[in-house]
Length: 265
Length: 251
Image 1 (cartoon, rainbow over the protein chains, first blue to last red):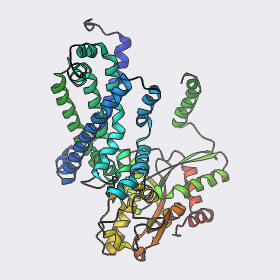
Image 2 (image 1 turned 30 degrees about the vertical axis):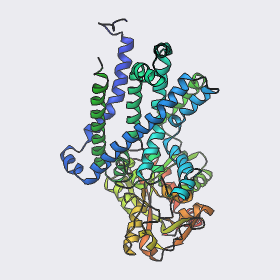
Image 3 (image 1 turned 90 degrees about the vertical axis):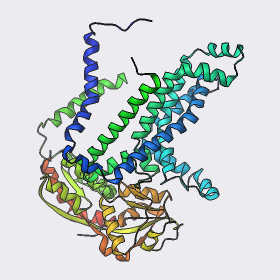
Image 4 (image 1 turned 90 degrees about the horizontal axis):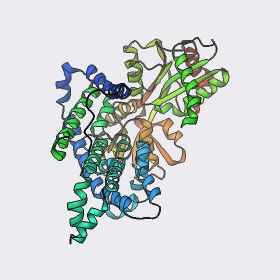
C-alpha cells in the first residue's frame, strides 16, 4: 500500500478543501459567537433540558439498534443475492433520504396512524397506537436513518471478497461462524461508519418526528424539537440547547470512534 | 444537470443584482409578505387579487407560525409586510424597531373545537379536553393559537391533558384531518378551510379566546411603497370581504 503523500499539498486541493472546511465550520462559530454565555448555566438547569437530552439519546440509540437488526440483513440481501429487480430495490431503499422528512412523517401517519393502513389493526386488535408516543419517535427516526446504515453496509459487503467466506466454509465453518469470524471483521469499518451516520441522523431528526410523533415534553419532545420551539420565542435558549446537543453528540461520536476502531491514524 | 446550468446562471445573476437594490419601476416590483399559518388561504387569495389590480407587481407570501416569522424578521429577513395572528408576536417585532408606522388590527378569529368528521371521540365540549383517554392536540404555547388555547381552557376551568403540542395551527389541523386525534383547538377559519373532513364545535367561552390579527409594514422593507399599498388593500372593503368569506370577524 502506498504511504500518504507527504510535503506540499497541491493548491488545487488545498484551496477548495479549506473553503469546504470553513463552509462547514463557520456556521458553528456563528452559534458559539451568539450564545448567551453569561446566562447559559441558568438556561440549562431546567428539568426540560435534561429530559429532552435523555429522550434524544435514548431514542436515537434505540432507533440505531432497530436499524442494525433490520438494516444489516437488508444490506446483505442487496449485496449478496441475485434477487430480480435488485437495482430498483436498492434505489427504493434510499427513498427516505430524498423524501422531505415532513412528508416521511405524514406517510408514517397514513400507514401506522390509528386510521392508517396497518395502524388501524394495531389499534383495534392490540390497542397499540404509535403516534404521540416515544415508540413513535423511535419509528420516525429509524425510518429516516436506516438508509445511511444500509448503504454503508451494502457497500462494505460488496467490497469484501466472498471467496474468504467460501474458504471458511470449506474449512468446516457454519454460515454463522463464517459471517461472525470472516465477514463481520472485513466489513467492520463500513458497519461502524454506517452505524455512526445512522445514529447521528436519528439524533438530529426533526421533521418526521414532529409530524408522526407530535411534540409533548418528556414523551416526544427530543432536543431538535425543543430547539425549534425555543426558536419561536427565545433564540438565545435555542442556541443554548443546540450547543448542548452538539457537545454531547460530538463527545459520543469521538469516544465511540476511539473505542471501536482504536482511533483513526 | 449540465444543460440547466446556463439557464440558471442569468437567473442567479438577476436575483443577485435585484438584491443589490437596483431601482425598480415605481408601480411594480415584488412585495414579500410573512403571514401567520392561519392566513394561508386568505392571503394567497389577497395576493392574487392585488397582483391583478396592480399589473407588474408580484406578491410572495411565506406562511408559518407567527412567532417563528417574527424571529426571522428580527434577525433581518428582507420582508415588506408582516401579518401576525396575535398582538404578542407583533410586539416582538415592534420592540426590535422593525416596523414602520403602527400595526393595525385587520381581522379577528375565534377558537373552535375541531373534531374529525363523524366525531369518533364523541367530544361535546372543552371538558372532554381533560379526559386522559381521548387523544388531544393543541398548539404549543409559544405560538398564538397555543396561547389562546391555554387562555380558553383556563377560563373554562379545564386541566387539559394534551397528547401533542404542535408547532403551528395547520399542523394541529392535519392531525384532525387524518383522524389521529379526537379533538383539537384551532381557529374557526381553519375548521372552514378543512371542509368536510373536519367538524367544528363552537366554544361558549369563545369570548375569552378571540385573537386579534395585526398587519404592519416593516422598517427594512425593500419595497416600502408597494408594502403600504398591500396593507391598505388588506384593510380595504375588498380585503375585508375576502377575510369575511373565510370566516374571520371584522376588527
